Image 1 (cartoon, rainbow, N blue to C red):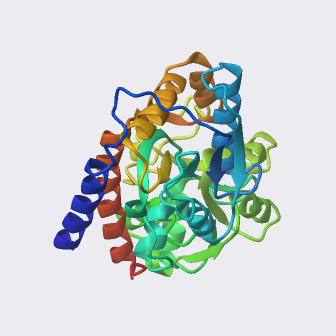
Image 2 (cartoon, rainbow, N blue to C red):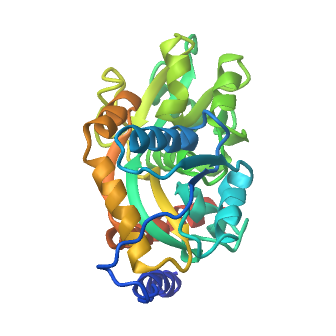
Length: 327
């Protein structure tokens, strides 16, 4: 596995190094037509929320004067969105708002496409996993959940959006660290986090592992109750919800959001986009959006983001091998 990961890492780093140098760094590149921010979720989904926040802030702040369209390509746990992007290479007007399923789909064998088939542009944020139960559930704490699953790992139905996705892995890693046989836990896969939350409130699920933003409407309405946040500390948005770590449970899976461009982008094109996103990330409107939605801002430029992807891929593959869901 180390050799394979090393070869893959060398390939991604080489891909960045070999970006066409036909356009020099000092030569400005500007979009010549409307840009498309591609998301793998339906309107209102977690990725869609990020993309539309970016669209609004870039437009209102006049950081970008060219039109931006948010294009929804749901299906296959991001596979259709990745195909849509890669088919448009090397056009730099198309960018994918990506999350870790670009790893997990590749590792599990769903698709041969992965980050090596795209150009890392910028890391934007990390959205943590929230573990939630119905408001009237007898499960009052994470310890209650663990104790129940230790007795019978198949006794509770857990809602997720993709098998091997970041929320599934975050919960599975937490359960495994607490002594639960995570492989035996019943996972019900839904198309969106919103659908799994609706099933939870309707009494069809016992637990949901989702993004924070996807759970907030049901939490605010009093229909769902969070047990824990998979983060190193509590979030300002949910100050009463303990982190897994403070409960003595480990889970470090990162549910990142970043922009990936098509393969074959030039250095000048990458430079334009990463500088644009750097300015957005440093602005007050973006910081306000992060705080309001419970997103953890974590900006990286292309080279640093590429190295980050290498480490995340290796760690994710290791977890999926342990769970028996890697190809």
